[in-house]
Image 1 (spheres, rainbow, N blue to C red):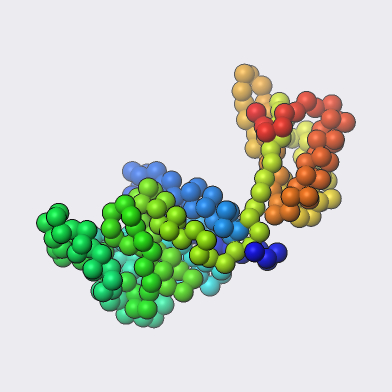
Image 2 (tube, rainbow, N blue to C red):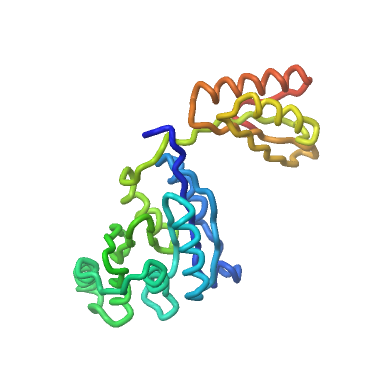
Length: 251
């Protein structure tokens, strides 16, 4: 663990996401997992099942951040083209990975065996490593700083679990929340001044409307516990002096 801030990009792939037929859950779970690894999710792009669009997004984000993750498009059907796109982006051929094939042969031994569609899930860019998938056999793929994962959220979760502790990261991001029936428009200057005085902290303001009243929760984030505590103390002091009631942990 270092003081350096490690970053990641995420490409969410699939026409079903863009059409609204499927509601994405992977952005939140990838972001949360990355924070624990000491890595910040810095950019997300949602792209269709179009080779050129995937290549463009992969190249932009793998070069712009320490890590790139993709979700979707590594299944058995004709429109699962993420492997093809990443291979072209990296300038390497697509191969049938022998270890992936062996895994799938064992998994499907009592399920009708391998067919053409199932064998597609053994395809990887040449030189790739496999990310174990305890849920459905078909592995994820890791090559350089690029990680290809399933689009199905519970399968993605298992792949993330398999990657836990394997990536170099910085200090994990920690957070604390305070909130109350406080209109954020009335404390915007206060929030900006507190954040400016604590440069290693970020303050997010999240308004809500409940019980016929307007309020906000304020989330302070930092990689430094002492700085986080000092920022929280300063924010609470300023809110109290301004006459606002608040609750630690938010409401």
